[in-house]
Amino acid sequence: MMRLFLHLFFAFFILALTAQNINKVTIAQRQYCDTIPFEYVNGKIIILVKIAGEDKRFILDTGAPLLISDVLQAKMRNKEVGKIKVKDITGKTNEEQLVAIDHFQIGHLDFQNTIGTVFNKDKSGPLVCYNIDGLIGSSVLNTSCIHIDADKKILILTDNIANLHREQDFRISIKLDAATRPFMSFDFGDNSSLDVLFDSGSSKCLLLSMEGYTQLSKNKKGILLNKGYGSVSSGLYGAGNAGNEFRVLVPALNFGHSTITGVIATASESKKKSSIGLGLADYGSITIDYRNKFFYFGSKSEKQLFKEASFFGFLPQYAENTFKVGVVYENTEASEKGLKPGYRILKLNDYDLSELTMTTVCEALFAYFSGQPKIILTYVTESGESKTIELENKKI
Image (cartoon, rainbow, N blue to C red; front, side):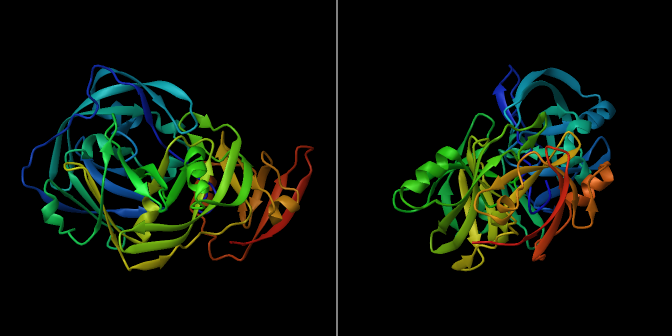
């Protein structure tokens, strides 16, 4: 949940499509190429979408369909056209409302006749901190080419890849699944390849399923650094189940003639698909050509060293209005000092987390500890004893 500790995945997986085509979209303009500024907040791209006559904040999430909040739906009163079963990252499912959205605008582009899924904003947990009303996903991007430049904080949408001049970039084919999410077969070297989703809703660089980790480890393309147990995922429908959580060294990500070395990834039993997230944008520009089914990466330089956030031997979890110790890794200072999954966190440095309000949740969410050599953690054990420990930032 906090930027450097908790991996919160707000991911949706369609379980059963109705007769409605959720991937339907019409863009009024032809031969378009529009540059759209965005906010870059905690590894999330937030763009303004003009909908119901007002500018609303949406997260760009290629791992999701189009979603709108129930608050926005109450104002728009879009016509319900069906129901759909949705699974969140924790594996929990629920039936959600599908609505027909006649029109909305991104930049100068008019999107028409789309289908959106409605979600409960009050139950979206820390997404409330981003003050958003929805997610712009692959279901409305699938007829365009999108270019992401995190340094310039611009997004370019066009119907012609030639407008983007990406000829010198690394290029790889993608396949679109039933929800038009972009997957690619990524080569890690020595005949080690994985099907990975490009998920702009994730702030991480590389996230592995346990199956993906197992495949990479056979050729030493995934080296186990720390084994942990617990739960860090928190989805739309609650906290995820506890399981194995590994910290893994991937020696290199190769993009043609450019390389990112020393990549630290996580491997989780709660993750069913491996993915590359928006953390990759720290190392170069990203382009997805949905129309011709290609992924492009324009590296900043031929060789870059991966920059890991802080590692204190544990990851917290926010669920059910409580901060807990989510995962503790073996052979770390946190483990040696007795920290265990499930312990309730009372204080983290100067942040009092004993009685949470949405304000304190958001303050903790956006807290930035990467420059800190140490943290001070106060927690409650299963016996009700309060303890305070100091942990050092220790990477590889």
